[in-house]
Length: 151
Image 1 (cartoon, one colour):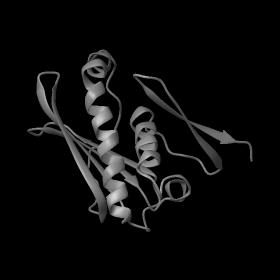
Image 2 (cartoon, rainbow, N blue to C red; image 1 turned 180 degrees about the vertical axis):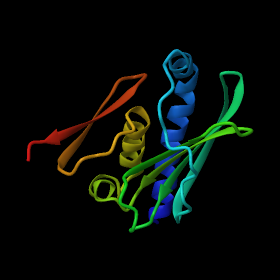
Image 3 (cartoon, rainbow, N blue to C red; image 1 turned 60 degrees about the vertical axis):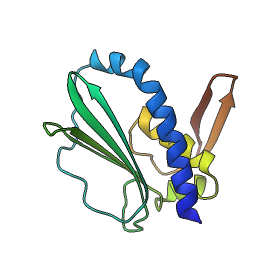
Image 4 (spheres, rainbow, N blue to C red; image 1 turned 45 degrees about the vertical axis):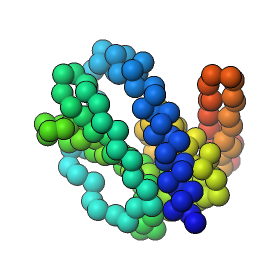
């Protein structure tokens, strides 16, 4: 059952990311390149995978988003950018077994969707602590933000 919840949450986030690409890619193209790990992410058991294919800077790209289920994985978020291929491949892996995801995203696809959007917008490690996840919705947009409680 959890795999179907993960798949649904990833599908929702993937659809939102794909829909935003026409607006986001021109802004990203104007930014300097960012240092990212270039070695492939090691294989891990996954609950769900989604690939987004598109053209960027006159080259084919694929973004592979994985939700892993490996309790030995200590990183909440892992990213690898293996440029130079055909297509260029960016791997993004979120550990569903990480304590942060266990606390916030184990029971419904909307929570998984929200945290995947947080990961896509600001791919930084999540420090330990206590958090609350908030969302607001208008007729044409859904916004999520994460608030760290004082510890």
